[in-house]
Length: 333
Image 1 (cartoon, helix red, strand yellow):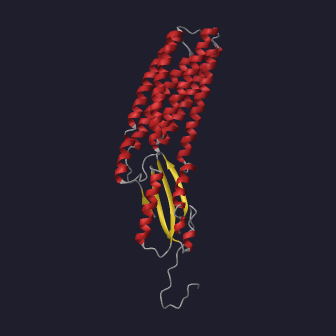
Image 2 (cartoon, one colour):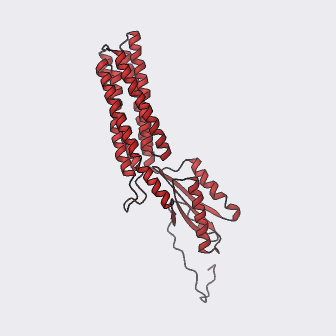
Image 3 (cartoon, rainbow, N blue to C red):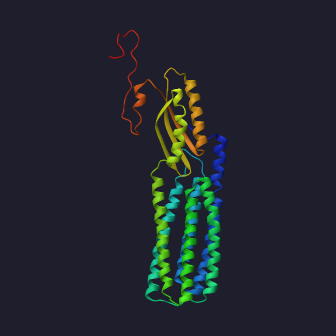
């Protein structure tokens, strides 16, 4: 089995870029502190349970940013003897914890909304409270866009989860502002807790999706079909030259992709010729998938054993040595 990853210089650059992701987590942390303070102030001023739900959501953002910062610090470490494939999976734990925190916040918001629904209370100084909440939402919107672009560019599920969470916070805030505004117009105070319950449901759904995505990532899913198609196209382009392949497997681990396949060539090729082919194939796969680590294995087309190792768990087969000259044994015996 032959392993080939990125060029050493490219690997160093990628590692430095991944370490640099921590500054985005610090940005998220700063935004969470700011918006939590603003929304808590808005709740104290108005007494709106809807704005309280917004403040609690920002508290979850703060905890999530801390978890993301810790995860990205681990991810930025280079592979070591105990983690030879890197530390990218730490991001799945980050997004999973964030999803769990979101679910907890949703339960707290729903509980408070039910209590306020049973005992409605008037809302005071809506103009000031809503203005503060709008400023906080604009901060979240701006930071979410920055995190989302960085997460997609660096293939960071932790940053992307943080960005999605902030965007859901923005939409939740919009719903809360709508509900509080309706209370101001209609005088129906029951609308405030009802909107808060709707916000809790939206927040809970976001948490469920994050937990599901994190769990799926820990199960080593295959790459998206579009990316697998790029690998297949690269390998199929060599078929007219008599080159075959099989046992193509892919998996995703955080920002890193792993691709492995067996290449079958005529048995009379020299080792150097086979090596040159694999170098060329691996370079083309890495060009199609820049974040891929490539594992290759070369086999002779004529050997029957070359066609029996497509399954992941290959049965134990001990190859028999060729008969020595002069033993009198024919090939078919």
